[in-house]
Image (cartoon, rainbow, N blue to C red; front, top):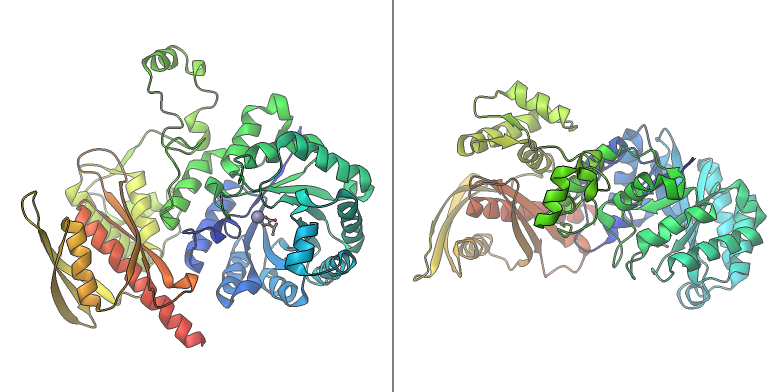
Length: 513
Ligand code: KIV
Ligand code: ZN
């Protein structure tokens, strides 16, 4: 049976998608989980794109031991130098360099002649080889490129030292049958490809990302690029969890498998959701809330008699376990720490103090504290920035016959400031009070609230995305999360966390300039 390498690009292509940006600390947290998931290669970012990205790629490269760490680089010397510098501390470093090869990209985007494109690609690979031995070359928009030209450029970069050749469906244009034929055609025209690992990278514009990726196996692909939850540019990339579980469930068909530790799939998906605030749809394959829920009576009856009547894979195989009561209000700091570590998080003593305080508050209000509650506390508490604003207290008054009011008191530099807000409901009024205290116009770009576990005393997990309209840069959009059994408190905390991040990012930007 063939083993397909899984190249995860959640932290690069995935992170490029709207609403999915992560700060360096969040990326490192995610990278550690991807390592546990067993990805063969993780693309940590695009080192040359900003100093922040460089540092983030570097810290991931310096930390991760069991996966290859790659940085993306355009086929230009400055990018490759940065990528080489950023990944040099990795146990297994890779430079992933790319240039577009389709007529439309070469003519309008690059404004380069085909021969010049080949020359740049070859020079990029040769320069990459000075930094690392593991070099991947991608022919961007390969599926809309001429196969004779592709064969020529691929042959040249392999001779220059490229060890993996990626032929991406950059715009999600191809279909499964066409893609298999296309890959076989390039292989036939370029025998040198037999000495390299053939990789694919499929976008999901026509909803075919996963199907196309799987169809590459028949054409000899040895690496598939994908992202957790399928996040990525536009309609996203092929979803890692779907590709992996399709291969595992249909080994008979593909005669191929991966090294992914499938029991870590759910945790990885949920961690990404918690960090980005971007949820998957309930009916999303593998990781959606309903993916293993049998609602119809006939189905339930069948499953009770024999699970295989309607279940082609088990929830346990992706790490869904019965929600287990782990801790209660009498549990101590050591028990919390032990459970956090069992769940796979690393936590400093300082972070543990914050998490423990939060845990105690929740345990006081909630009857049962589940793993998902603890994970929510930890993920939230490990991505803190300096607390410029802190919530002191709030009082809300609302009803169906009165205008809602919320009084909010915040502490700023040791001084307490209080304002009254009005709105359509208590949360709207709370945000109105926040704007008055902050005294500047911030756009509430997104707000959502979900319960972490079930039941009347479930934790409310709020996400707020704030944007400063005075800035046009992507970095001036920040996301905050708040967790409490009281939804107004979780919403206010999420707002304050987003606000503190915004202030922190602005300060860093000012210092940089
Ligand atoms: O979609 C694409 O072509 C890419 C390349 C940079 C691999 O993301
Ligand atoms: Zn892509």
